[in-house]
Image (cartoon, one colour):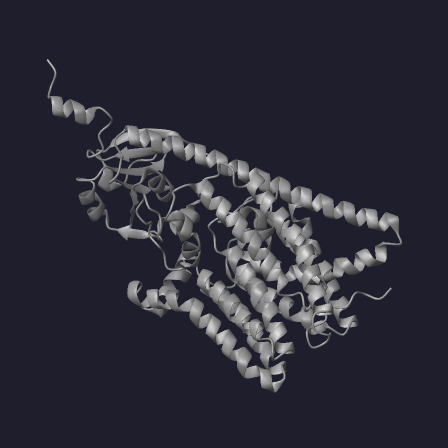
Length: 513
């Protein structure tokens, strides 16, 4: 049986209002349930009761109503901050923010795959969406204020629209989609946008000459629109673009030859950050799909080649490899979210390969049953990891709530300052400013400056249980804190300006007789 065609009819291939309109409707009908299921899974597994993570807190604090902004280090971009601003400027509710992002990410999944409807059959797109949405990093980070998934949506949008514009010079919406996709990626993570633009720029010479200038202009305009803010901020706050790039490299551990395949395999067990990644590989079953990914991608390329449509699959595959390369080869640690843009693009050749396999297996019930069982087991495992991470997020929120309540009882109330380990999350929840002493990647004050500030503002420095205070906090009052999940106990040293509840009333009444 011949494989399904790789392209749906375009407006120039079919009479107006016939095949093209039917293709659009079918793509929408098949993709909408996938996006809806993605939203529901987030709302059930991740949204309820989870607090903000460390990076999320930095991004959200920039536009929060009730807490000072945390230090914004050189590698970060403000795209995700702009994305969450409509909610954070209205309400401090983390649950409201989670629901907003869950629904928005589901809509983005639908849109970024729908633009491919003229290039791939609707069933392939629906399967690609289900494969992408079913990965635990996609599920976990959908309702989170983190940029990587939005780079993935931008990459899907940009590459799909790029291929459409290359095929049809009259598709002006496709050119606008290229600009929008590249701009979204650059606004979220400028470095990722560079790795996305490079393979697309290399493809331009293979496009018919009349379309090349428009494609080059679209790639450049998207990069300029999305990256302008980061470049301007580099000049205004970081001493220039080169200085910011150098500092960003330092914070990320320095870019060099650091193959990290093993780190990423270990991280798939549910580690949101594996740095350093010297832990044992205790759950290899969570990485089985990673070994199948290159084989299924190759199968998709072969299927496309046999159908005479290799370019439609080769371009997203090349873009995916380009986006993955720096994180697999140049960064010496791992976080599964780093590879989300690559997974999004590779979902297309993988879905094409699996569609071909399903077509052949229809007449072989045993083979079809094995394939369905393997996919069901894969999805169940991804959901289990997501549920575990959601439970961990709820435990973290409970722990931080207890810590903040104790600090408030001991007099650390706004306007206040928190420094030391986990200062960003504790300070945000307490309504305090987080200030770290120079020397770390987010240092924002000198030790002497912090000591002076502590004279007038209630100040706490957090250290591991049993550790001494820093030299500038010697003589401060020690306070044992509730345990932090996964890291054990912490000790806070409180400046004399932090007085427990009742102390101010005693001072106003004077000494008792």
